[in-house]
Image (cartoon, rainbow, N blue to C red):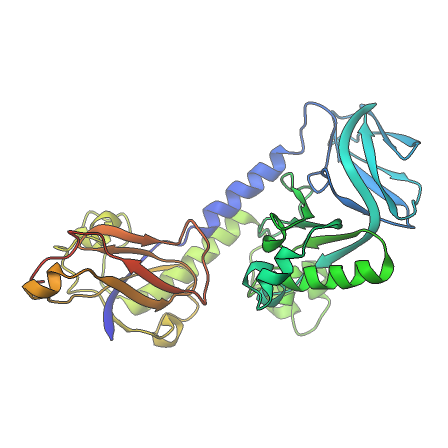
Length: 365
């Protein structure tokens, strides 16, 4: 099958810049607070000094208490503070206090593990082959899981938005990393201590994206590549836009740029049945667009496909089968939205089947 194709601009640069601005704003708190990774139901590492950190007005005193021990420190000029509490044995639940008031409840001490990697670590228990049985038997209150929100940045970040630690139960375990859950269940039975899972997995990521720029620069194979890469959000946005534009200019020469005063450049028109897509290039599906001239494009592409129905076909209940789409889609038929996974769970391996609403089809084109 071939379809007409067009694109909309990659928005990742704007999202990244906004996220970085939000992270910077976290550095100027009005009162003492803990860093976002700390939360109710969390697990702290046993038998090792416990490091606690957060934010407070610059120069102000901060006091943290845990298991009958308290430590005090002072926020630096940027408002950041950190302190160290004595090592603790496995156990709990405990409360952690900040400035004399209870800040965290149901805190356990045990072993904390990072669940990192790609999609095979990210894969949730609900989609595992034994998911239903494992979830039904997941009432394991000594296992805790926290999902860290996906966020890409060019520099190390000082903080992250407040997270939610989940206690393992049939109501929560389905969203846990499947590998992490089975690992934690086995380890908890063997070690008889609480287990905390910090889920950082991000499908499709490369190890280089998790590595400090300074460390990569020491490798002779990576150093030349890094010299040509941007190192600030503004420079990255300009670099990404220029790179994307070069791909688009090669793919669709002569077509108007986004925002131009021409219907070919108006995304609001592309889903309408009367739109003239004669100038659009052609792509073959199912096939990745990177193999058809859009190599290196990480963004959004619009596809259009025209069919003709007779009266009987138009009256028949219909379902649109689109196969698998990597990763998200928004789908219209005759200008009517019939499917949208872009704001739900985007997934590269989930077939799209959309029941068409009554009246969305008609005889003819």
